[in-house]
Image 1 (spheres, rainbow, N blue to C red):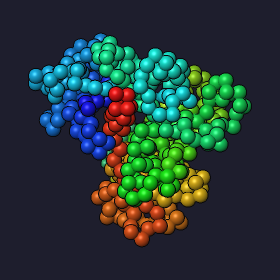
Image 2 (cartoon, rainbow, N blue to C red):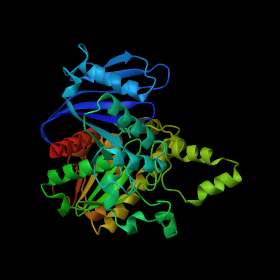
Image 3 (cartoon, rainbow, N blue to C red):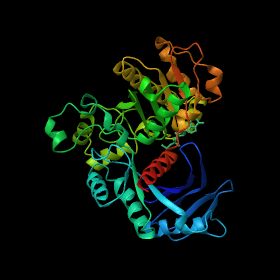
Length: 400
Ligand code: ADP
């Protein structure tokens, strides 16, 4: 079944065309990104099968023209991979915020669109462009079923003690202020892969998944369910990230606004766009930070120390919250690739009986703990697009 995965942002649309047979048997036919939508200099970066990437300049005034251009590329005589766009049997969309309305992926219909719109209040930068992708697809492929896959859905299993804040209950009931958590497709995918690797069911294992990319979050899985996660009401809470400050005394933004004559938008930018590694080291990208540290930059060395320390604290907290841990999993850009950061983080878990296999870790192998280690440590490549494709496949297969 040919499934098109769409991740629609404010000025770009990432896409990937899968041919899915089963969850384990699939091929990627093409993928790419339509960028600078609504801005001058728009283009589509398109990769067909194993061929070289092509950059195709074209005007993309809005999301509908971009989706239409992607469809045309997929059937193009030079760049195309299918004969006719009608071969696409389903479109899966990444939707960031499902609020409390969605505990799993769903077929898109009127009510689903209304609920995504309602949750736009909680994710004003993400849900509206996600919806544009859905609406554009409805125009260009009106009879093809669409599925929405939410970043928040997997975390809806958290108990109230994990998702409520120490605020009046009115803030939750009336204003929906609670922990939602994000990166759900990634945490879910790597936790399942970890269980498969151990050879046990997910339900039997206590797993802590560390998604360490530009954004980053840590999730605790108990009885096969997410029971806590470090991102909160928004993706700002939790560990230090590329440009996000992570956990902060909640009074700090109020104090900054009062004493430094900053508007709330300026403080928002300070915390979300100019915080984290960027604020601490001058670089947002971990590879650059590591490079600077190698060259002796004290800021970079201290930034890495802080980054690692905060992650260690979350892992420790979740091990305590679950009364133990069987597997610690690392994923996303930093988690999959940086053996140095993984080693630094894992150094403090010898108290749990964790023994790092340095060679396996340096080679970015899946299991990076030794055979006689009491708990597993793993580095697992995430694949959020594949999760969206297989969720779409499952829902459409059930429907027909
Ligand atoms: P996004 O959240 O944008 O999807 P990624 O998962 O691609 O991000 O992760 C990007 C981060 O991963 C960047 O900080 C980048 O420097 C880091 N990264 C990628 N490769 C390596 C590597 N080999 N060593 C250290 N960090 C890496």
